Amino acid sequence: MKKLFSMILLMFSACLLAISQDCTIYIPSDIGTELHFQTSNAKGKIQGIYSQKVISVKNIGGETHYDLLQTHRDPKNQEKIIIQDTISFRCKGNVFYIDMEKYLNQKQMEGFKGMEVKITTNDLIYPSNLSPGMALNDGSISLQVGSGIMNMTTNIINRKVEAHENITTAAGTFKCYKISEDVKSKMGFITVQLHNVSWIVKNIGTIRSESYNKKGKLDSTTELIKIVK
Image (cartoon, rainbow, N blue to C red; front, side, top):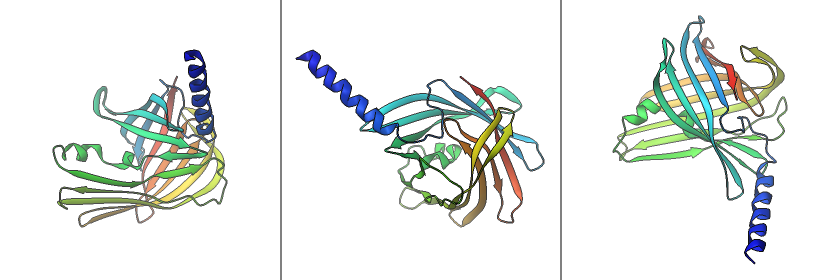
């Protein structure tokens, strides 16, 4: 009876996993895989380096949850860690979800320790079959500290698949989907508007991204420079 129960449980788990595997993911799926990125300003000067390492892949209630450890390092001394945080992704059915909490400024969040913080999100999603011209859903995150001491909101709108094209970085050449979006962030009386363009590929993620200010001038570029498996 115990063996029969174990077999049924195993088959049930396999069915759940099969359901979650229908979606196309835009991150690595193997634990231990590391992606290394480099961010430069408009003049090409390196401003930041960071890595993302897959540390957990779990099946929870028919969904596959992925956790990546994101580590930001000092560009002048790569042994020095500036900050680390965990970012999360999930697959449900044939849809890939990106946790909007990845857009929070972690340094600012450290300043809210011990305070009541309410976070509301509407996660970004990617359907399995992207194609040029396709419109994607909006995403948002809002944060309220205490009883309205501070409020922050970020809305990602006008998301669209622009093209399917090759992008080359130090990590190699990849056939990517080009995604454009507008980002509007507000903290108190301060409002920031950006236009982002990113190139993504399945089973890896972002290969290159560009951020433009509200005047349409390039602010920064981030590129994948190395994959470690």
